[in-house]
Image (cartoon, one colour):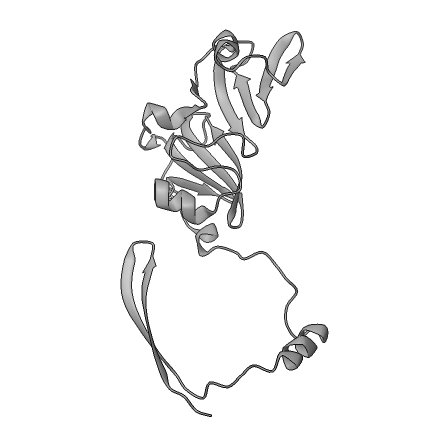
Length: 199
């Protein structure tokens, strides 16, 4: 039996609005046994992760020349996790969060302090925190992104990254070919955030 349908949808993707009109004719029931047979015969692909179109996004300054800083500084609250920011001391962290779940030493110096899936790393031979890393859903960024969230959520809350390097989106200020980098990095596996690093 032939039926004609008009389907109207508003497409909102990356801030672009448009109207899509589809004419669907000759709608017939799907033969589920044929679909199953095709799957069993390997005609359809194996299940795989959905890859986000955003996974291949380019950063604002990916091809900028070296020699000067690029990007812009994020608000101070964007560089905090569970109330702790870069520059805090281990004493500040313990006073705020209590006893850590793990402390790692090297050569008599603290190299990391962990609170579940939140890691604090100091400047070399210092008590001052340089880097904060989130490895699970124990914490979120100030804007609400957690490990396990999609790149679409990151994009909706932070916009286009300043720098993209393989599977890393960076927001903040950086200088090519130097250690100068201040901001937040989202490490992902195609469409899912796997780690968040504040540096």
